[in-house]
Length: 462
Image (cartoon, rainbow, N blue to C red):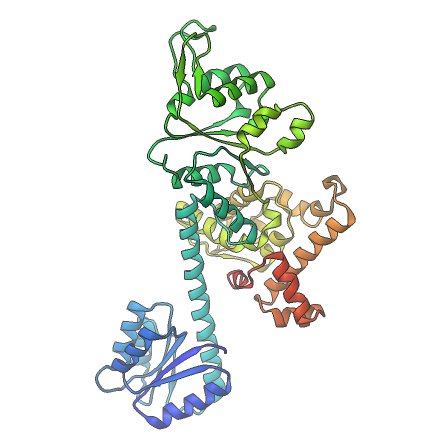
């Protein structure tokens, strides 16, 4: 089925003629005899297009057009009339009509083209509304995490399961994948959400200062300690403490952290008294902590203490089907900030995005989009708006032997990127993509399912 169309006309011969023509083109068609009846049908069916006469009893075409555009802006409207003048045509277009057809409709080829283009525009608008709704739902529910791919669905599932408990959570993933966003999503959904979530980057502080930051210190504990200071464990009491890059800490600090977690109490640096704490700990690392334990860089007992539940965040290269949602979100964000209307990404840039390895992950994509919005002189992101180093790395980085890929791994990456690009070029149509690639439709469908690709997202890329 190519689309759902409502024909509104008080002339039975026009209704029959249009219905026969459109059903032959595989459209789903419903007829209505006036504007009031048409609105009742619109309430119960999701139409892509309304073709309405101008002159009708009870509610004329202009009145119907106004109500549709006010209440159902995603539906396109084409006007038909034997009394059409230039003035009424311009009036209808200003209100929101897509185009008009003059009765009797004799140029059927022109009519088919106008209807086809109106349906396509309606579907793009509906897809934009759906995607933005998904983005808004994802952002509100998961504190800025965006994505509908299978790897991200798994992340959301674990977040929902662990949020209401006080279980220690370890988030592992490459830099730029959104580990702090996961921590904030867990905290927001938890019973501690009314209290603070306090993040600290363990890798940004010298070890001696990190201990003072977390546990606090007493006056005179070291040079510069001119007064007692509360630590972040105390500030986060009854809330959540997020230790980012915990793998960068030394063994001495790890020992003190383990003791605090085991006994649920802390002792300030230089002090003798202990203080009870009720703080949930969420940790994160861009290194594999199991490997760090084997290499003697991380305490095994602390690893088991903070690793009750692990959330593995996928790199962007493993969930490129989320690129449409991410790009749409970042385009809107930086368009609003800059005051520029940038709403499209060129086909050439999309091709580069799909083949790029994104070593900086989602953070890098966000930075690339921000730069592009600032630099572009049009409403479209083009190749000339991308950073030069990204263009130099394109088609090279993914298969570099420095990535330690064996042949089968490189083959899998190539196959996934090939299928993603193929679906983009075919607007997500499996049958068209299969013919273009020389694969059987069932075989390509199986590969798409295995990769967890949602073909509907590729309409957004057009």
